Image (cartoon, rainbow, N blue to C red):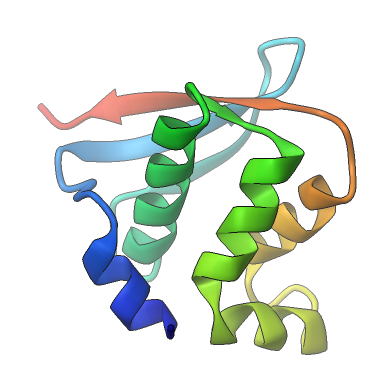
Length: 106
């Protein structure tokens, strides 16, 4: 399944302005905003957080890489081109968990 088809199956994240990812110390390590160029990533991370109890685990990161489909191969071929996928590539190989903080739209 390609990325566009996968996005159609994920729950909407339209009610969010952003999603923050927090490390074990509660520090924000990344923010994914609801804006052009990031809406697909917002949907992926939002769905992963919902499936994994609000946390992005290494298993969640691996699933996210499957969902990104053809974009995952592009991220591997061109490191830095897809930072939200690069993050999952790194996290899928580790043991750390990252808390997802949802920022609701006003």
